[in-house]
Length: 49
Image (cartoon, rainbow, N blue to C red; front, side, top):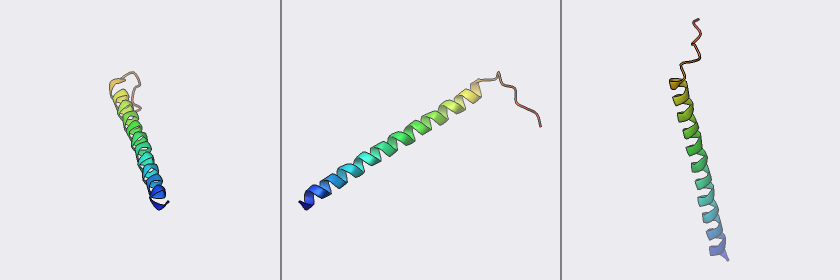
């Protein structure tokens, strides 16, 4: 019974790790898109202080 518990824990950890990696990847992509958008869009004039 112990090895079954261990297997379940290992699979759960792997699953969680994959989910976290996916979330981080999507966040990184969102950042890249935002940076690209801010660089390419010259329509919005920067406010001079």
